[in-house]
Image (cartoon, rainbow, N blue to C red; front, side, top):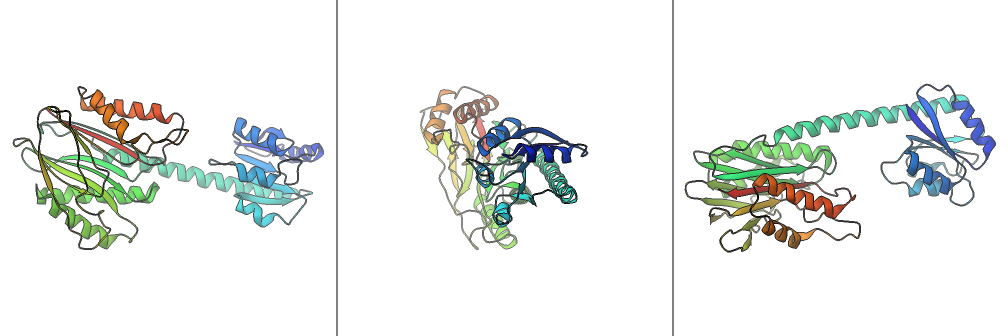
Length: 365
């Protein structure tokens, strides 16, 4: 059912249009508005799928109403006696532009356009939902046993399908690989790129074992050849050796993970050791190694976490994140990830995510 709002400052014009719409299959006029301010209030209140919008009205014009709308916008069909606004109308996402007096055949064609627009949107919504479900299945469904680590991660996409990912997988006896990546861009194309990156890491990592810098260089060369120049990925990857309790890692321009030392309370950022994957041909990467102890916590995250913002545009920031983890260091990985996300959500309030958000906790047993 298409839910429509009729906006016109002249009651006879509203009555005529309502009469023409009566009996139209799968369409219901849910409200009327007599000026621009009334229209904005009713769009906010009723959330119609379609607005028939006059242009010349007292106070705020129809064009000003259309310009004030933010996504998700209703579909707009302008209904006016003036033809000079047609080009501007389509700049404001109009589906159609009808001249008064309205013609029934012309109105029917406009409604056909609206239906096609809605059908296209529904198909896109289903595609995004399917892609989102597929992407979720690519994330670890369980953690490898016998790694000596308590592991957990969560990935949230800002647009249904995201460009972040995390992964845990064995890379030999007593060794586990941990990855957290973020490809440039958002949406379906970013989701396709990140799936390719994840597959390459999984296939190449066992070959390189703890020689993680060689893995980084091979990933970089492959991605540079197969993607556009403006497509790249930041990536943190480490191999944890349970027997030696040693983490060997590289950081390809990713937001530095934080290592919380249980014995001293110190926090060590794992800084960048090379450029983003796929950005520069022949790039070289350094690896680093750290000896870990029981209770040490590695917190890896994408930049969407510290950059989460609230209504006053203040960001959550790394300082809050450090304090949060230090205060909750006794929790399991699952509970610590949950606490981080709960505090970020409380900080954001009703602000939507402006970037994908991923957080991973690895706690040494």
